[in-house]
Length: 435
Image 1 (tube, rainbow, N blue to C red):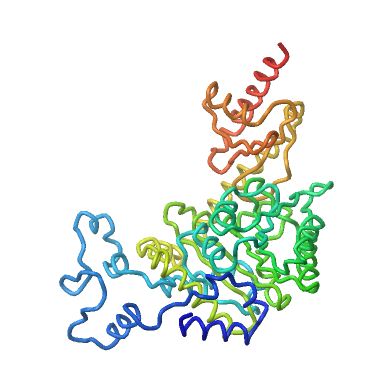
Image 2 (cartoon, rainbow, N blue to C red):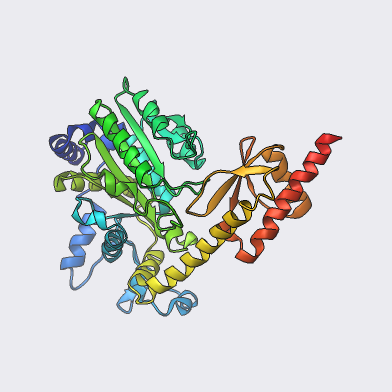
C-alpha cells in the first residue's frame, strides 16, 4: 500500500475507526498523489516566473491557446476560465459559492461541521465515487422499492453490492420508516449498510414531512446504536423543488454529528437545481466533527476523481459560478420554481377531480419533477407502448402497475390534454380486454 494511503488510513482510524471500517478495499488503498505531475505543476505555477514547462496545455500570447470559432461564442468569459484544466476538486470559487448556497438554503447547516463541496461530473459521478469508496462485493445498499434504476448499476453491477429494498410508502401512504428500520436491522450480522435517501424521490416526487423526517433520523440513530456502521447518502438531485407539505432541508443537515457510526454524504448538483442538465456539475460533501477526518476523506475522494476523470469540465464550472454570483440569480430561479410548482399543482388539481378514478390512483407527490400513477385495470408497459404508438405520448412504465409522468417537461396548458390522452389509452386497452 502506498505510504500516502497508509497515512490517510491512520488518520481516519484515529479520528473515527467506524468510518475506516466503512471504506471499501479500493477506498482503503486510494490516495491523491502529493508527488507527481499535479503537485510539481502546482509548485511551478507558484514559482516558475520565467518559463513554466510543466502542465499539458498550450499557451499563446500569455493565455491558453484556443480556436477563434469557439472563443467567439464564449467571449463573455476569459480564456483562463474556460480552457485550462480545472483542479481535481473543482474551481475553488465554485466550491465556496456552493457551500455558501447550501447554508443559505439549509440554515441548520450553519452550526454543523462539514467539508467543502468537491465538484463531480454531476450526480451519477458523485454516487459512483461513493460506491467506489464504500461499497465492496456483498455489502448491502438499502433503497426503497420505488427508486432510480441507476442505483443498481452504480452499486450493484459495478461494485457487486447487494440491493436491499423496502416499501417507500406505509399503509397511510407516508414514508415507511418502519420498513427502513427492518432493512437496516437485517444487516446487523454484516455490521454495515449503505443507505441512499433520495428526496424529492425519483420516480414518485415524494418528500417526507417534518415528522417523517424525525422518524428517519430516529431509525438511523437506532441502527447505529445497535452497532451497525451506516454510510448514509442523501441524493439531493431535486433539492429545493419542495411544493407543499414537506421538509425543505436535506436529510444531510439532520444527520451531521448524529452518531459516530453514521457517515453522512451529500450528493447534489446544479443539474436540476439550476436547470443545467447538460453542464454536468455536481458536488459531494461529507459531514464529520473532525476536520482531520474531513481532510482525509477529501483526499480519498480526490484520488478516485484523479483515477477516473482527472477533473471536471472547466467551462461548465465557470458558467455555474457566474450564475450563482449574479445579482439576478435568485429572482430568475424563483421564476422557474413558480412555473414548476404551477405544473405540479395543476396535475394534482386535475387528478383530484375524480374523473380518472376508475383508471388509476396516484402515489403522494409534493416535490421534484415527477409523479406516479397506479394503474387499476391495465398493464403499465402495455399502456406505455400503446400511448407511444397511438397518441405520440411518452411515459415511463415501472413494474406492472406504475406509470411515471414527468410534469417537469409539460407546459401547464398541456397537462389536461396529457392526462386525458393517458386516460383514453387506458380505455382503449380496457375495450380490447373486454372483447
